[in-house]
Length: 346
Image 1: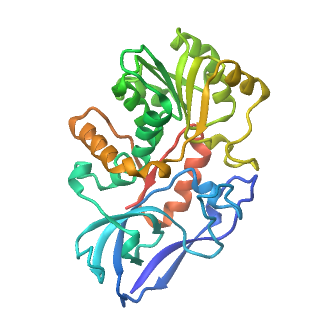
Image 2 (image 1 turned 90 degrees about the vertical axis):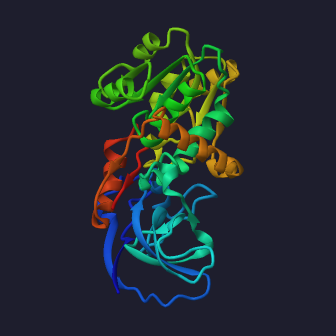
Image 3 (image 1 turned 180 degrees about the vertical axis):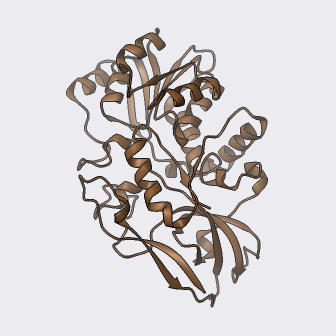
């Protein structure tokens, strides 16, 4: 059968901005002649995430991320349905997901790379398994639980950058549910600010493109900042950290504003920000959700319950058609630098 796939056509370079031409759509012949342990899947959704920018370089800069190779099929979070199987764990019609799903409309994959999912956990929204009830949701939940030190009744203030993105929007809602008295989001438009406050329950929101972040934070966080869920890095994070309280906690989730730059990860901080962290005993430790997968099952159940009950609302951006996935990735990186945005295609 003929299937479509997306390969890495060229690299943007360590200081370059990705463009759609870095990706190439190809048509190949897939022979569904399965070996023992293999599964034939049809792709329903692919997740496009900021960390993939690092994989476009010859060296990803992170020991847990492999670089994509030129002219080879790309991969990432994906979800689909089993067509045929020679793996005892799966049968035709099963909905399955993987962290290393090939960017193909159909594919032959090893069964041990797949995980079966129950559509009811995502309230029937299959794309949620790549977002709110997947690694993105776990990143927000476990990041706050493991690094945020949120305590009910402690009258804490949390600030979230990239707050209208997939991870940030969840982190703010989880912070509120876990007991933060105030949750303030930073995002890139007045429309997003309105969504954060009116739909997601944020106490306040700051438009970093139009407003003075430092001034607005002082207004929105009169008692300072206790927890900072950092998705963006750069000057925005400097402004937040400068207003953090003694013994505060930074959840170092992402640094999307720095991903196009040739800098190590996490990127170096300014001397002033480093001094603030040290003098105020603020913790800032790298958070990698894959290090906490022993807590994934319980975390996903909790996220599922919150979504079903309406306590958490999910923001999604969906782009249709595998031919548009490269453009969707570039749009996410260039137009939403303050957001951890998940884009799926169907």
